[in-house]
Image 1: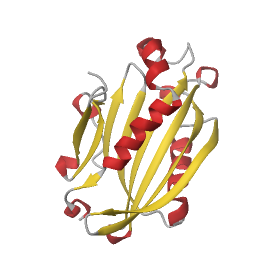
Image 2: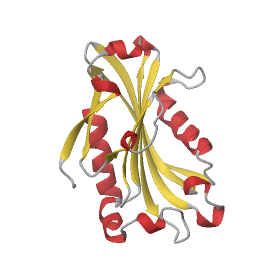
Image 3: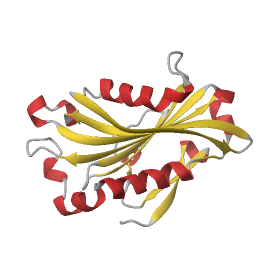
Length: 192
């Protein structure tokens, strides 16, 4: 499995997104919440999480990606965060205008709640597709470690050569951009 792009059906085909074939559908090996789809490449410790969430009342449209970046940091127990880039734009999905905000930054975080001295440095890319017509945020997060502690729980699984190639900032950004640019909503009834 490699770099060839594969269109992945999401949420029973109601949505779709293109990711490299090297990303495995995690629902094949463990339970994933109904509002999420998760794809991962164990050899690089990169992962995509696609979530459908209710609109948060305290996150303005222009700051939606930042809001979700901060939630990811908080829920993941990040020791520190550093924002690198933020953008926003309107995109048309079917007959609907959707506000898309994108950001990425670094988070120092322990995998599986590793202790602070085992924390990894992870570039977290977040795209939030805010769909007011269905009162939902569709959040695509892409985690791409830039440093993995030798004592981290995931260190034995990571291939240093693959990580050096795939986790390089420009390579990781290209994978993330391809995914969010190809995200499609095929059936709006998914939202109720």
